Image 1 (cartoon, rainbow, N blue to C red):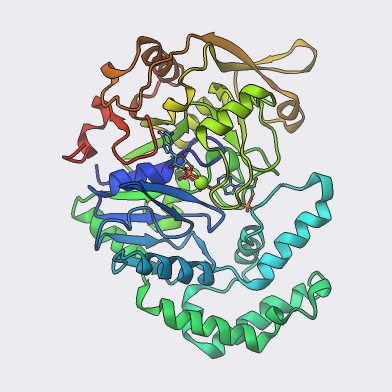
Image 2 (spheres, rainbow, N blue to C red; image 1 turned 90 degrees about the horizontal axis):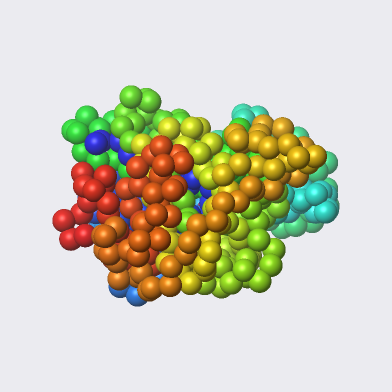
Length: 435
Ligand code: GDP
Ligand code: IMO
Ligand code: MG
């Protein structure tokens, strides 16, 4: 299985980082393919917590080749800080590679992100304000600055000038902000370029060669399917494509290099920021799940909205991505909640029902999940290491999900630690020897 894509199947924060960390032991290359430091991927290793925003989640294995692909937008200051922090903690980052073609988040992107949200007022998207949207907008407008531009001061200055000019009007409220001075910005970014230069590389050929040797490449997604700019709940989405198809574009490989696509989903649902959420629980139970699951954003610290598992959205995600396997995380968080509910269709206004995920925003914004009740369990499941170790009702809950989607479950998370994971038979091919 040389090419395995890991994608978020819901609204992000499904536990992709933990899954990639586990798979990285067997992988020869881990490559991030989209998003930027709007992502926050948490890994718990020997009770030590690591939070990655840009660096691929395989970096904790010494010397592992971990690439930031061309599809990622990189804030070079955040990246240098992340590298410095890993250095401080004694982590070997010699395997880090950054695509020379990755686009850079510039100070004006962050200011524009904030200003855009302020302008929207009560209609705001609730972005992470990291400059992600404006950076991808410049990429599409062919006004982007790329990693390779950091290595040539003259080119860099010219490109920053060209990118700044058309934004003068929008940036007028920040006219006196020293960050926007062309020369200071150029100098600052040249310095950051010096620090990152040892890691800058042509990352696509690294992926080709690894695939040619038949070795395992893990394509690490950020965000989730429902935040996809084409397939998610537009406009309440991010500005990239977190779906599996984007792995090819954001890493520079062809579709035939992808052998498996695993969707990562929590056993319930969460969302950060605004937008439709048909199974949202705005009551004490929602609060209980937030507390039990530690549902506070890794990047912004915001409380995540919580709700029941939405199988309508999850089946849609299965279609859009072409899941070959499903990973259910945080099953342990549901322990003690009895009965449980899952949404199997949507109820619209005036008695309408929707078996499939509706494309029309007016329907989606009003849709509520039609819930079926499933029995819960009360036993502590954090020690379970095989499906048979789980209580019958937990096994039935997983079977219900798998049957509804028609996709096998390959792993089940029963706690945040590395070993708190059940590997089902379907995942044998990539299972580390120790697991
Ligand atoms: P990502 O953005 O998809 O990588 O996910 P985040 O790291 O933002 O959020 C997932 C959170 O759940 C992290 O704090 C993980 O440590 C934690 N986590 C992952 N899997 C499990 C699990 O199976 N059980 C529990 N209780 N926590 C988990
Ligand atoms: P990981 O990789 C959860 C959400 C933001 C906002 C919307 C747009 O950790 O799963 P943006 O800053 O991207 O323009 O914000 O997308 N969002 C995430 N939500 N997890 C993430 O990443 C997210 N990245 C962006 O909250 O609603
Ligand atoms: Mg996250």
